[in-house]
Amino acid sequence: MSDWLALTEVASGPGQAGRPIAWRNGVRLDRAAFMHRIGLWQTAFAAQAGTRWALYIEDPFEFAAALYGAWHSGKTPYLPGDALPATVDRLRGLVDGMAGDLHGAITPADGAAAPPTQALDRDSTRLVMFTSGSSGEPAALDKTLRQLDAEIHTQHALLGTQWARDADLCVHATVSHQHIYGLLFFVLWPLAAGRAFATHRLVYTEELANRLGPAPTLLITSPAHLARLPEGIDWSLARRSLRAVVSAGGPLPPAASVHAAQCLGLTPIELFGSSETGGIAWRQYGIHGDHWQPMPGVEWRIEDGLLAVRSPHLPDSGWHVTSDRVRAEDGNGFVLLGRADRIVKIEEKRVSLSAIERRLAESPLIADARVLAVAIGDGLRLAAVVVPSESGRALLAAQGRRAFNETLRAWLSGTVERVALPRRWRHVEALPLNLLGKTTEAALAALFDDGMPAIRWLERGEHEARAEFQIDAGDAAFEGHFPGAAILPGVTLLDWAIRCTREGFALAAPVTGIEALKFQRPVLPGTRVGIALQWRPATLTLTFRCTSAAGVHASDRVLFAPPDA
Image 1 (spheres, rainbow, N blue to C red):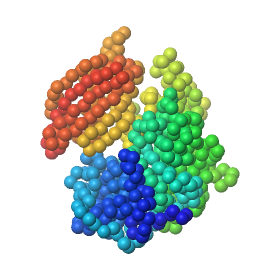
Image 2 (image 1 turned 30 degrees about the horizontal axis):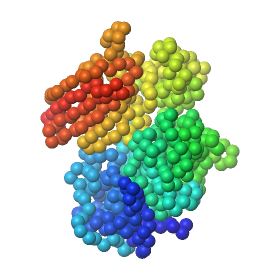
Image 3 (image 1 turned 180 degrees about the vertical axis):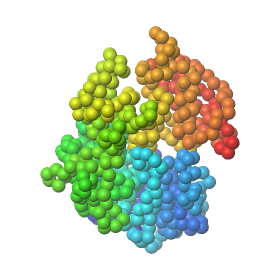
Image 4 (image 1 turned 90 degrees about the horizontal axis):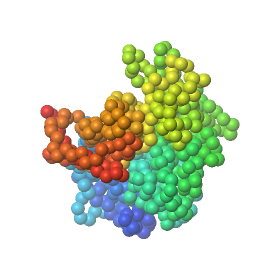
C-alpha cells in the first residue's frame, strides 16, 4: 500500500503536496489545497466554545476539510443526513453550534492558516452520525476514528487494492457523504488510498452515462439508482471507464443486478451491514447468487435464528446480535431471510411481512414489493405496495386494478394464510425513497392515507426542492371527474403540492392564503408530474410549478402562518 495514508495523518503527514484529492469542474484539487482549507477550518473551530458541532456541507472536498479541521481542533462533528428545517431543529438540543451550509453556521476563517502537525488519536477522535432506520426518529450513533479506520482497511483488503491499481482512478457517487456508507467509500477511502473523488454528486440516473469517464472510475451507488437505470441510453463511455460498481443500503433485486450489469458492463458489488455494525458481508449476484460472503476480519454465528457478528468495526469486542434472520450455507456464507422485527400479529396470528414480500417478488407480475400493517376498521390488516413488472403493467392495463389484485392474492394464497392476505393495494412505478435511498415505513403508510401518489425526491435543500410523482389511471382522485374523459381535479393537484411542501421543508404551520393560482393544462391519467418548490422563510411564502412532458400544468404562491401562530 505504497500510496496509503493513515486516516490519522491525512492532514498532518509531511510532504505529498501534489497528492490528488478531488476533481471540481474539471480542475484537480491536490493535498496542498486540501491542507490549506483544513487549516482555515481548524482556526474557525478553535475560536468557538463547546465541542459538539453539527456539520453539513454539500461539497465533499470542503466537507472533508471541515471534518478534519473540526477533529484537529478537538471538536466532535455531528453529521445530519440533510439540512431540512426539522432536522436542524432536532440538532439544536444536541450540539453547541452549526458549521457549513446550515443556517447561522460558522464558516472557515479568512486569510492564511497553518495546517495541523500532530496526528489524530484513533480513540478520542469521534463523530456522531444518525441512523436511517425504516421507522421512527433517527438515532444518534457514535463512531471513533479507530472504527472508521478499521472499516476502510477491511474494504481495501477485500476489494480496494483492485480499485486502486489505476493511479488516475476517479470516485463518483450517487449517495451522500453525510451518511456512513458515502463517508467511508466516497471520502475516507479515497483520502487514504490517494485516489481523487468527484465533487459533483450524481443525482439523476441519466448523469451516469454522461459523467462516468473517460478516466478509470469507481461508482459508489445504491439499489435505488441501479434499479432505475433507463433503457435507450448510450452507456459505452461508462462501460469503458468503470472498474467497479459498489451498492449498499439493501439487497439489489436479482433482475436489477442483471440489468445493471447489461448497462454498465459490470456486476455490482453489494455490501451488507448497517450504521451500527459497519460492513458485515458482500456478494456479486452473478457469482454468489443469494449467498452473502463475510468480510475479512468479520466473525459471525446464528443465535436463535438471528445473525450475530463480532468485528473491528464495532465499538467493542463483544458479539452484536442483529435483527436479521439468516440461514447458514456451505462455504461460510449465509442467506438473508428478512428482519425479525417485521413480524406482526393479525388476529392473534404471527405474520412475517418479509416472507410475504419475498413471495410477491417471485411473481412474474411484480418487480418489487413492500408489505405493511395498517389500521382497517377496529384492527390491523395488511396492505401491499407493489411495482408491477412489464408483464404486470400489461395485465393491469388490460384487466384493471381489481382483477390484478385478485391475481396477486391468488398467487399468495398457496403460502399465506387467508387472514394475512393484503386487503389494500397500491400500484406504483417505483417505491418511495428518501435521500438515502431508503423506503421508510412512514412513506409507505402515507400512500394509504389519502390516495396521494408516491413522491420521488430528486433534490431537497433548505430553500429549494424538486420531486416527481406518477399519476396512475386507477387513482381514486379520478373517480367521477369526469366519466368518459378523466382529468385530475385542480384542487387535488393543489392539495398534493402543499403536501409535497410540508414533507420537503418540514412545515407544520397552516396555510393562510393562496395567490396567483393558475391551472394552465389538465393532468390526464398516466402522467408523470414534476414539481419544483421554492420556500422563502423571510416572507413565509412557497411558490410551486407543476410540469410534465406536455408542459406546465399549474403554478401558485402559497402563504403560511408563522411557526408560533
